[in-house]
Each structure stands twice: as C-alpha cells, then as structure tokens.
Length: 522
Image (cartoon, one colour):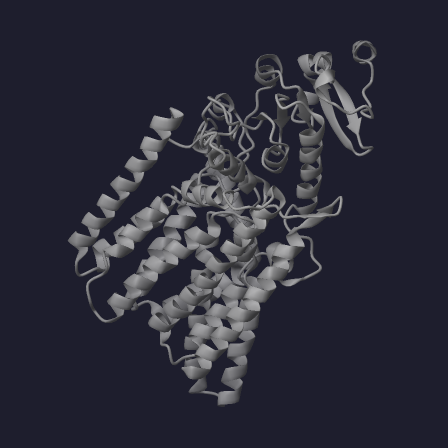
C-alpha cells in the first residue's frame, strides 16, 4: 500500500510536469508575444465569457442579438471569472489550461481509488490503471485543449467512486452521486446520459433504489429547468443553438450511419484492448456487481455517440466517448491482473509477472488511436490545430488593429479569430447563428452540415469574409460584391467592394472591383 501510494504521487508529479510541457507546446510566438489558445470551439465559449465579463451580456457579439452558441454553461461562466483577472487575452487560455490540468490530476486520483475499490487496494491494479489512464492521449489532449471532456469525466468518475465505496460495504447507494451527476448537466447537457445510465443500474442493483430514483429525477428536473430557463428566458430557444445545428435538420439514417462508421473505425484501432476487456470480463468479472454499473455507463455513452452521429474530429477520438477511456483503462488493468493471478498457478511467478507487464504495454499502445497517443507522448509531435490557431490569431490581431470597430467579419473557423479580433462576427457554419442552425439539409457532417450563402451574402452582408469554400467561391452574389485582398503578404481574405474604407491599412493589396467583375463575366 505504501509503495503504491508513493508510486501514485510520483506518477501525478510526472503527469503534471508533462502536462505543463504540453500546454507550452500548444502556444506560439507572434511578433515577440507568446500566445496561448484553446482549440477553436473552446475559443467560442471564451468569446461569450469575455463579453459577459465586460458587461456586454452572455452573447456572441455583445449586442441585442442573443444566440446560445455554447453547450458548456458552467465552464463558460468559469471562463468569465478568468476574464476578471488582470491578464492580457493572450494569456487567459493558459490559466484555463492549468485549471484543466488540475482536473486531469484529480481524474487520475479517482481512477486509482476506483481500481482499489473494485480490484483491491493491495493489488497492482490501482497504480497500473492510473498509469494506463495517464498515458492515454485523447483525455489529455481534449482536456488541455479546453474542451469540457475533463470536467465531465471528473463528475462521472466522482459519482462512480462514491457509489463504489458504499456498494463495496453492502450499504445504500449515496443519493448525492445523482446530485453530482445532475450538476454535471451544467457542464454539458449530455451528462444526462450518464445520470440515466447510473439510474438504470440503481434500479437493478441499489438497496435503496426508490430513494436513488427520487434523487435522480429531482436533480434531473432541477438541472434541466435551470437550463431551459436560461435558454427560453435569455436566448428565446429552449436548447443551445448547437443542438439544433448538430442534432436536427439532417436525415436521421445519415446521422446514425456516420456515428456507427466512426465507432467502427475507433474499434478497428483499439480492438485488441477491447477484446481483452470483453473476454476477461466474461471469464473473471461477470459476477461482480460493479461490472453491470460500468456496462450501463459504457453502453449509454456508445449509444449516444451513435445517436448524435459522432464527432467532428473522430481521429482524435470522439469527445462523447472520451469519458469512457479512464474506465476502460481501469477495466483493462483489472482483467490483466486477474489473468495474471490465474496464470501464476500454472507458471513460475516471474513468467506471470512478465506477462502482466507485457499486457500493460499492449494496453498503453492500444487503448486509444495512434494520433492522439503520439501527440500526447511525443514532445516533438505537433499539437491539435496549433498551426491553424496561429494563423487564425494573426487574422484576429490584423482585424483588431486595422479595421473599424463596426466591421463585420464572416468566419468558417469562428473561435480564435473572433476572440482576438473583437469585431462583430458571423458564424457561417451556424454555431452562433440561429437561422443557419435551424436549417433542414440533405447531408450530414458533425457540426458542419449547414450553410446558406444567400443569407450570408444578401442579408448579413459582412464587410470581410475569411475563406471561400463549400460553394461560396462560385456564388454569384459573392463574385459580384467581394474582392480578394492580401495583407502583410500572407493574410488573404475577401472584402466587400463598398467596405474598403473600413480597413485602415494603406499597404492592403486589393484589385479594382470593376476589373474583377469584368474578369468574372468572361
């Protein structure tokens, strides 16, 4: 026990140090200033947070148009508190990343505790499971990039640890675990899936199932009543705008097919570890009560991933599945240990110990896809979207420094540039635009299925458009009204022909609008 705890502290220290290295790797230097940025979607929440902290409301553009373009109310409010600190915008993301690192350390501690409760504190399973979780790239990458994966995972593991502690002693399940999961709904509304999964397990396994059900339903109702009040009362829509964008408006069969395809591709890369967990559970764990609780949580998350059609960056592992990875790491380590105990009766102890070590090495390699593993474990690997973030930041500070305050900017990548430019922004893919999010379309790509160029060009009429794809490049109104511009030799964008005066840059290269229209007509 003492050795195991000493190893835990050593592992936590190493993880903390490596996490600091990763945070530094995500940063970049522009004009002598080191800039810290979260991934682009998280910077959308940061923009809402800054507007709120500055007294402009929990809004996208700081005006009367209210659209709930974030799905993480509690993290967004925490970001707002950070914006009350005397820090420049280039450093606030680093503070948030440090906070996420603390949550990741707490997750490792909870994995250690859960493994001890389920497999015995005097076995190697707690430290082995914690090491496997620490080596897991998806949770670390998504957590330190600023997604809500870390706080959501922490809530789920804390609830399971509270239940496991009581259940192991044959006591009533703690109703407070359901309250904690209900609070997690304000981290992300889809924590509802975890709450309902644990409730199903409680109705089957908990001695005090009636009280657990009552606490779960009360917490669920209160959390959702507060969310609906925020949505309807402040934004005029009951659900976040991103719900309509991602979960509605596309043929349901296409949505499910994409979710299943992503799941199949994930399993193709980690199937050895999944097979060990499944077969080992059948062989040695099927009589364990906690295994059925775990199965409910895993099954619910997988079903939800399919229901919503998967995630935008499946190669980094779907964020809907990331909270399961610590649990699968734990299960894998436990199965490997049970296999070792069974094997030790037939072979010399050194052989059994070697087999256990090899199994853990296999788990470290196969519990997550290669991409995020390499990104997390290799100090020389590029971090998620770092180059994009740097380029989007350059656009942001150029627009901030060279345009009038009322210059409207249309963005495909809506987070980093909008945050640093601090200009009225149009999200052409709809995360913070009600009209686009509510569209009906015939295709599906998670979060990137909807756009309306007639609406953008003729109704919203942005002064500047960053990027032209998805058919915009051939749209008649775009070709007639917008001209390409080049700034600082490397930054290219499109400028409305009557908005030239809003860009205060004498070195801006802009062709004559009439000449461009004549070229387009030929």
